[in-house]
Length: 124
Picture 1 (cartoon, rainbow, N blue to C red):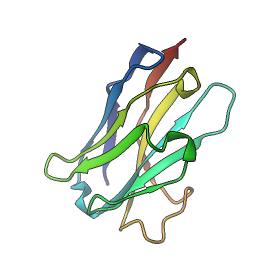
Picture 2 (cartoon, one colour; picture 1 turned 90 degrees about the vertical axis):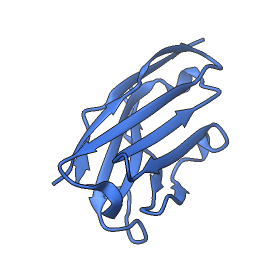
Picture 3 (cartoon, helix red, strand yellow; picture 1 turned 90 degrees about the horizontal axis):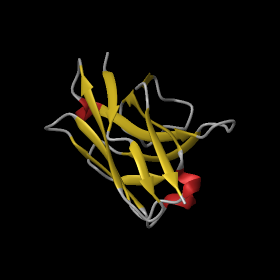
Picture 4 (cartoon, helix red, strand yellow; picture 1 turned 30 degrees about the horizontal axis):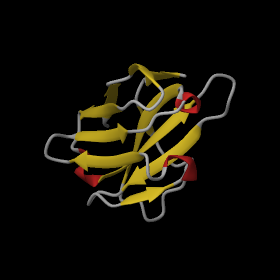
């Protein structure tokens, strides 16, 4: 099975940028559908986007389109999330997730492997 570990979170002012990474171990991610989620305090977990094995992206959340860029480097076994123009409402714990197989038939609730999360705090 694959283990996931997020990094790159922190505190930033509104309008700033952060780049999150999700490093995988135990198995190559090249065969896994990968995704980013977030959960703000007292809110339900929100799916942001999934990244196909070949790098294509399908968005779950309209709120991040145009500001967040999702990518993966299978050679480095790492998933990335570049966040620009951050807003206070982006404050949340960010998680990466994975499920074996490509994303074509993957729904938000199908992800089997999860990281521990990295906190992002955006101040106004």
